[in-house]
Length: 385
Image (tube, one colour):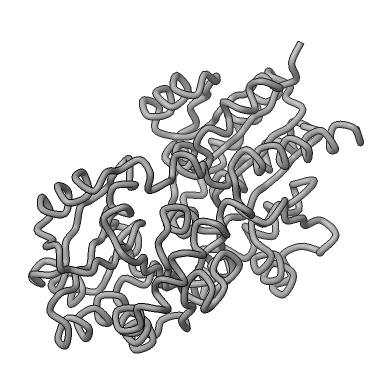
C-alpha cells in the first residue's frame, strides 16, 4: 500500500504551472493528494494529473479569520488521511499547510520557498509577513529554497537557521521539460503566420516578456526602456504575454496608458501554451524585482532565446552574464534599454548567447532529473523516520 503525499498550493494555477507533471510522476510512488482553492479548477487539474484532490478555500490576501478556518479544516483532513509527507508551496499555503500538518503530527513537513513577496513590502505589513514566514519555517521539518540566492536571503533575514535549509539539485521547483520546450516543434511557416497575426513584420526584432503584468515583475521599467528603444529603432516590438493583475500589484497608470496606446507593444493576455510566443521572438526580457527560480527564464533558454534578466537570486543562477544572457540591476530602466540596444546592435554577441542558451538549460535543469532529485529527498526523509 502506497504512503500518502499531500501537496498544497494556494491556487490551482500554481499546481498547473509551477509543478506541471510532477504530481503525476509522484503518483507512481505515493498516493498523492493535491490541496488548493478554486474547486472546479482544482478538480480539473486532479483529473488531468490522475491524483486525488481536496478543496481548501484559501485566499492570497491577508485574511486571518479565513486562514484559521482553513487551518482547522486541513487539520481535520490530515488527521483522517494520515499522510507521511505534507509538502507546501506559496506563502499562504505554507503557513496554513505547515501549521495544520504540525498540529496533525505529520512526520515529514516540507515547505518549498520559490520567492519572497515580503521583500517588496514595508511597514506594518512587512512585520506581519516576517512573522508568518518565520512561523511557516518553524512548523516545517525542512525548508527547501529553490535557489541558492534565496537560501542566503532567508539566513540573512533570520527566518531560519541554515541547517534547516537545502537547495535540491541545481535549483528550481520543477525543472524544465526540454523536449516540450524546444524550437523544433514549430516550422518557419507557423512562426511567420503567428507573427503576421500579431502584426509583426519579417523585419521586426521581438522582445518578449512572459508572466503576470504587475509592478514587481518590472513592467514599469520594461515599458520605459522599450519606449526609449522604439524612438531610435523602428523595427522592434515588445510582446507582453500574461494577465494584468490590477487588484494585487498594478502597474502605474502611465505604464497602462503606454501599453494601451503604443503601436509597437502587444498584449496577448494569459496563454496556456507560451511556446509559439517564444518561438517567434528574438529575445526575452525579465526585469523582475524578486524571484525564487523563474520557470519562464528556463523556458526561454530551452527555446534558444538570450535573456535580459534582473541580477537577482534565481535569475543570476540561470543566466550567466555574457554567456547565455545579460544581467541588469533591478528597477533600472536605463540599463534594460542599453542591454536591449546592445543585443540589437551586436549581432555576434546575440548569436553567441543564443547558441549557449539551450545547452545550459538541458545540462542543468532537465525536468525528469529534478523530479528524481525530489523523490530521492522524500526517500531520505522517510528513511530517517
